[in-house]
Amino acid sequence: MLLQTVKQIVEWVVPNLKVEDACMEHLIEDVDEPFLLGPRTDNELADYDAGFKAGGDGRELDDTETLAWQRGWAEAQEY
Image (cartoon, rainbow, N blue to C red):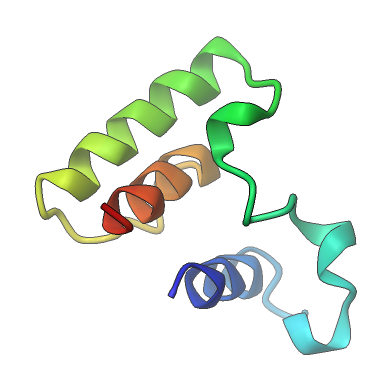
């Protein structure tokens, strides 16, 4: 489910790109690695936390939010 969500996000951000036509490792970071293990800015951490809370509270995925927020939301779905 997480990979499908990431695929949808990438294709939404770059409309003419189909993930199957590109090498994923050059487009997005390793989605198997927890977001918080990589280096993050304070804003990314705040957005991630807000997305995680929203996901945990049962809110819908909001594709107008930052990728950090969406990643937090997606990781909350795994719990």
